[in-house]
Image 1 (cartoon, rainbow, N blue to C red):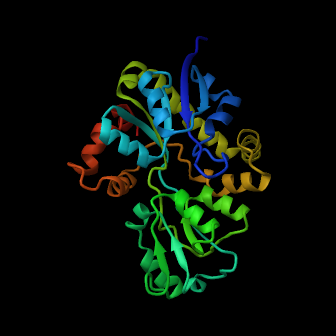
Image 2: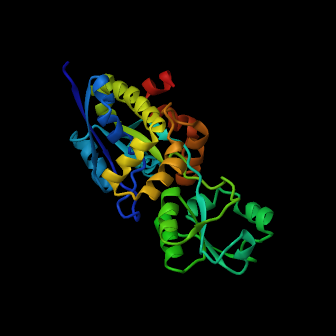
Length: 300
């Protein structure tokens, strides 16, 4: 059987010692022969740097890129050249991670909390701290709003704050370094559409059939990953240097959020637009009609 070749590129989450890809499914799917069963030979390649991945898409040296929704939307609004094929993770709530001396939420009185500004603005933090710790933000505890999750992580691990709201992979690394996840924290802080699957408008016209086959294989790959814990933990150790405990956390508390439907959750798209560009003309519905491939929407 003649195989069509696709170059799929992804980046690792900054600040996690090179240990986290937002969606590592391709490695396991390749081992299991899932792409080949769909007539594809897929290269699943790490390329660090969002701009470098966009350069490769634009030049045609890569066909598909896995990217965080914030970066994908910013690039589309600036260039109008990309198209979204789907999303393998629509949502993944943040953890509240604290200094080990903090035993319960009420202990944060008089302390400082870091949270990325764009997610803090649209999250009901004040209500959550009031309900669970009888704490008033700004009055009982200081809220610091760094630009990025990496900054919040650094503020926590560097001792500048005693608590931080962090994406789960950052939380796992912090736990490995002696910090602790706070139990009882609700799933109210999120990074909408953390793993989007994108290509360019030009490549979509040229390779729509191959991309359709890729999406079907990736759906199967996610189902395979979720059904094979031991294999996934082994793969995370081999490809990303996870310890067995870190790989188990990644599987049990992060990769479970992968969505094999690969459709884009419209509510999450609205949240993403509110974070990145709330004044975009036409809002999320017009954005979806321009940005998300019609082939995907018909199948979704």
